[in-house]
Image 1 (cartoon, each protein chain N blue to C red):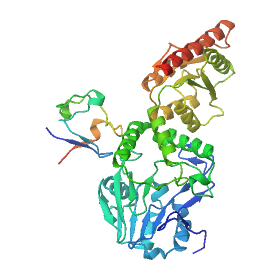
Image 2: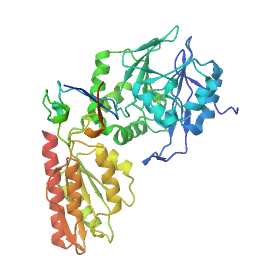
Image 3: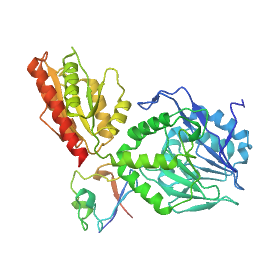
Image 4: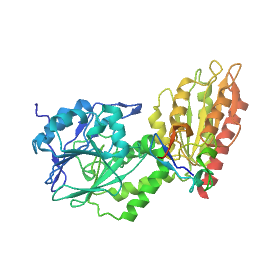
Length: 53
Length: 402
């Protein structure tokens, strides 16, 4: 599964790790994150993330 | 160039070459009642290095202080720990004057400096753990993303044991004596607390992680040199301890009542809620927004774990001063708060509902549905306000004892 990088702060979403602090289980693909999920570091929305090349 | 000031030596090879701003009172909406400093530091290593610059209008003060030690053109390296314009504002001009061999910033710093000044191609990016040789000395970097911007990093000068901590452990306080132990502790604590409340509170979790990683790294530290306010020589452990306390924001028995009023009705309610808080035994403070500044409310939020907000209804809405302070405080994402709302109204009375929505969106645990009084509160209304204050106080006491 692809990793996604926050355009605003550079934080990387790794599907293998998920975001357990915010209720996202390890193994969750970026596309399957809830629409209201935000970057845990800087707070921007999903649309401000880009696929890591 | 006019000689505006000299450098102040802070260790064998390091000099403070920053600027003191005695004038500034409005720092992007943060009231800086005691002015501030923009700190920059000069490392007289084989490779002469400047750590950060100052706000643009203070360029000549920076150059004057540098010139008291060395010709600015002799500087080899510049390190930009933080891209915000109070530290980078004169960076493009300084680069033009100095023509340094290299300018270092974090990867996000390179991007931010590009977006500010179109100088990204001049920047050499560095990452956490990278170290550069200054000939006879070494400086290494730790990225501190979102503390408090994506570009933020700190630099550690090994041979002199100095941590250049950028905005971390800083405060807005104009001083004529540079070291912490030469200044009044109570004033420094107050301003550091205000700085934390207004700038760092949203990133409290990251602060806790950073404090842990600093402990793990166990760097020998003689000086912590921030970008605003005094240099920590004697009291760093004390301020680091306070950072831990502020970041955790564990419940304490102290409440604030934040309100505004049109014809004194909401003010009467606020005062009576205060009496209820007094009855419960918690500490409290009333903050009437017609005479209080939002940035002082931020400090009071940091000191408290209950927030009771009051607004009259005006044109089906809340009072504009309340919208201001609630927008501001919401952005600061305070944790471990309980709260309630109140207000007077004439006919429609939407304010309490709107205030409740605000508090809920801030994850404040609501103690009650709030209380409204029509036009001028009756004895019964004031009794209800007293009980509301008492109820919040009792809940807060119970929480602070857990």
